[in-house]
Length: 382
Image 1 (cartoon, rainbow, N blue to C red):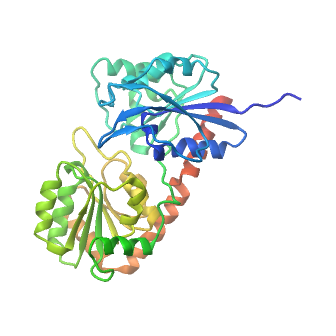
Image 2: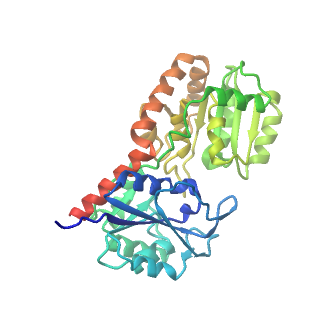
Image 3: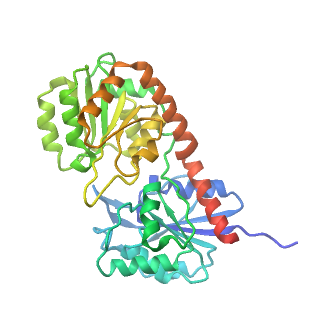
């Protein structure tokens, strides 16, 4: 009897430099069992958005980890991997998964060096039909021609890319995942977080904002809506960014009602989510950006925090009926939606339950990992 060997999967991402971002690779290794052998390739060092990052170890990780040099890593569009990438790609792989956009230099590098016999699958989160200048336009055409399939992270992404030369290749919409063991309802952690902020547990409901302090994320909308909402509230802003000075100026006018917390490690974010009664996600579409997914939404769902969100980009698909969707610029609608949830514990509990169910059914990492492997298996069987 012939011995059946596991499929050998190589998954490549500069974001794998952060241990928590390798959860997909870890869960694919776990879900794959004896059918899949998973190797993750990650930079030894990368200049992150907020801080320089050395490759982070992760005890108990089930995937094999291969470190590699990355150059020009201050630019996500221009960075490229070291020459050792070519040697790694020439190993015996059954499929290569590239979690880099197929128009950036690193994505083109993987497509160029990946042997033609190996199926190559790209991830993309691009949900605006941009006209890229050379060489990025040529890189995208090459990647679309070379790949065996592609993975848009949302429906809006798929709709955008189908008109850009990708319609001839198989694809599967698979969202980003959330750790439902780390992100879970924890009233005790929420009470402790409020106490650290100098708030009593009793008091007005807490409206929260989680993410970058920039206009694209709707920071100004959040401030204006809270300013004009007559229902009692407290507000917790977790994140950082260039609009922080303006946010602190605004907060000073509201005294003890507002708290701003920055520098929160990802594994402490659940504590702050559990301190919230409602999450506000008023993302604003611009000429160059619209919400690609909204990780804060699924993290709030997993923690049982009801969500009010705008209709920017992918948000309506992510939220569906598990939260309240309001037009991006419909500030009267935002005030009504916020007042309803601030004043109705029953409605908050209803959306909290829907969000938890949605997080576990669609966005938990084991579910997301299995969907990746199912798609990869379909490509290998074709």
